[in-house]
Length: 170
Image 1: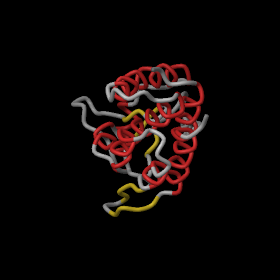
Image 2: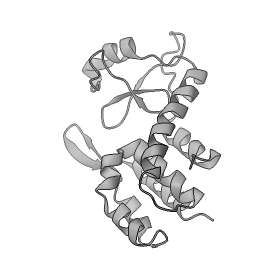
Image 3: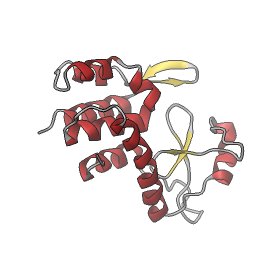
Image 4: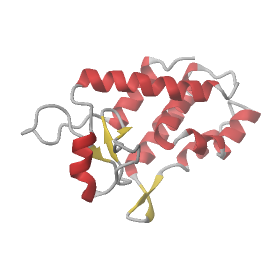
């Protein structure tokens, strides 16, 4: 399966583009609430050794290693990143509806495939894709480590609700 326009729109809405320094030409990276530097639609900024950049102290490095400068580049990078996540969700071998597939691709895009694979959300989906309690499992993934402390983030709460709504859409 491939992510539909509804799924792509959801991801774009929550990842958003950043053009924070209007003195600089093009898009700039941004630091997510968990402290990781991202560019485009949520792609991690990596240094020349493939390490994630995090924290305000790495802002100059994030700007240096950032490669996405235009909306077209951000769109292209998102499509590349989606192919990888789609392959991961497809590898689960379940017969998803389009909404279920899109919601899980968005979830994996945000929290990673390893987290989905070990989640109660997936355990419940394997038993019954339409189990209404799956909505509660989405809702549990609304926290991130901020300055070493696990915190509920309103943006993640909204995203999980949107993913759950998409998952159960007809």
